[in-house]
Amino acid sequence: MHSATHPSRLASLDALRGFDMLMISGGGAFLSLMGGKTDSALLNAVAAQFHHPDWDGFTFYDFIFPLFLFMAGVSLSISLKNGIAKGIPQYKLMEKVFKRMLILFFLGLLDKNAPIDILDPAHIRYGTVLGRIGIATFLVAILYLNTGWKTQLIVAFTILGLYYAALMLISVGDYGGGNLSFEGNLVGWIDRAFMPGRLKQTTYDELAMTTQLSATCLTIFGSLAGKILLDKTTANIKLIRLAGMGVIGIAAGLAWATVFPINKHLWSSSFILLTAGMASLLVALFYGIMDVLKFTKWAFFFKVIGMNSLVIYLACRFVDFGESSRLLFAGLYGHAPEKWHEVFNALGGLILVWLVLYVMYRHKIFVKV
Image (tube, one colour):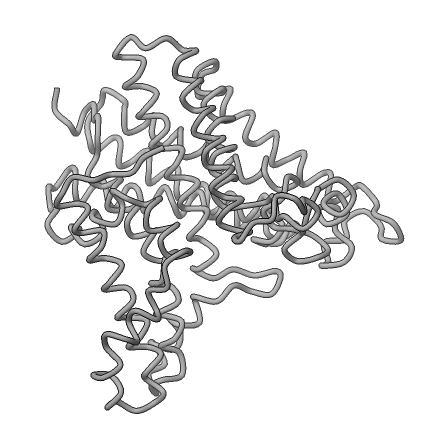
């Protein structure tokens, strides 16, 4: 069957995942460093999009992690569908997803706490990026294997609605319901009262358990996008559905933001819908260009990264590519004006990261969990 009709692996997904991981692993920091280096208003505006707002608000950098959660849902639906087609029992599929969750959870602990002191659990940060991905995919796998798309959609909007109601109606200490400030929001109170270990922001942790369910909705929406890609229909209809899903998500997120601000720290319902809509449009764009029109060569740079996304994430945590870049390239960029040194050093680090991944790609070494 033609890949545009019933795909088993889409080139666009690897490329989009690679684009996302590039931003996470240094590309975003590189673009941020460009700010103020020139008089270009455009360049400075782009650089400003790679800083997280202090509280309410939204920049493109806020979209990077939600995009990965959405992509995890897309990949999950395709993986489970392929497993079902091969006759793998449902309990075996769930066993695999459960083991993956545990591996990601423990890798996340290592990532956020290295060097980790297991004898001092009170100072371990338990909310992590990898843990959030693992938990989200496990929960969505249960939904995917036991319900239809309508039920999944209902579950997602029920979670987002109840989350909004809870933050609006439940009082916290001396603060009344609906207080969404840094100090007075319900998320922070629950984290302080029930979350073990260390909280990143002291009064709350944006990756702790309170925001896990709303964040999981991104993976639910991603799995629905994956269902669209798996439908036995024409590529044009898939593109229309993905684009429609994207436009509706963005519109709904912006409308909800009038009463529930877009806030990545709180993973607010408006933030979830906005980023889900943006992610759906990006999936449609990459799918249309690469899998429908077959323009694929331009994305090879991203594909190399996307095929080993876990490696690049952890490598950038445990290997000092910035110092390697300085040792290798400072003799060259040292002749440039000093304000550009950090920019060229960051670029050198990105080049080194990509070359490591390219060697792995050429030798067909792909690390998956």
